[in-house]
Image (cartoon, rainbow, N blue to C red):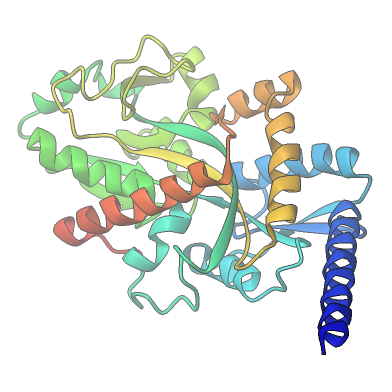
Length: 326
């Protein structure tokens, strides 16, 4: 009986060792085929541009093609749903903007997105942050937030890249904090919102830095405030809303890389390591700056905390202010 038990123990030890060896070999062999990074928005936007930048750098590092797959629609739900339903093998990933955290909170269909934004994905890395600015068209004459507040008797509005976007949420937060009632004009994307401010059709917009940088330099737009805790290195002369007396007006956009739920720790570690190195590359830092993004990186937990914090905080704001996407 004792011999039989020892034989079983020996067999079990051999089995465990073989499994560990196989698991290690499998992890070392990842990736062995092309990886797809899903972008839940059309080609040409900042998320798409970042995805293509990261795809190029990642492909060079891993020796495998990395393809960007645009799956736009429903405030990012279509692309996110595709990744949520994909095999957890590390070959289908999602590069998501911060709208990811709030989409199901602002859509009229409520939580009917087909996935759990907090538990239905595996966080890999928070790629960067994007400060949000309040900007006025040069023809408005507004040079400060005080000028804007003093524009009594005028019917004013602000443009955003879409209903339910972080920019829309920020606009309504500023309205409440500053006692203003600026109307909201939603657009389908950043470019048309910026174009209408440049054309004088809408006086103001809440926007990321990249799309407005050349217009600030050319004097066609004027930044009034930034919605971050500290001044942005992208525009250090622009005061924060906190400096102007509105301490709770902070909304920072971001991009994060996610995989499907239950992605193995080995794959997460591999991808996280590659992205942290990519985010240190001088040409990547420079390109991100042109898009209005600041590289972040760090452990997967950083992205998990950011996603959860936005879901909780903005869930309350969205409910309180009655914000909805179209």
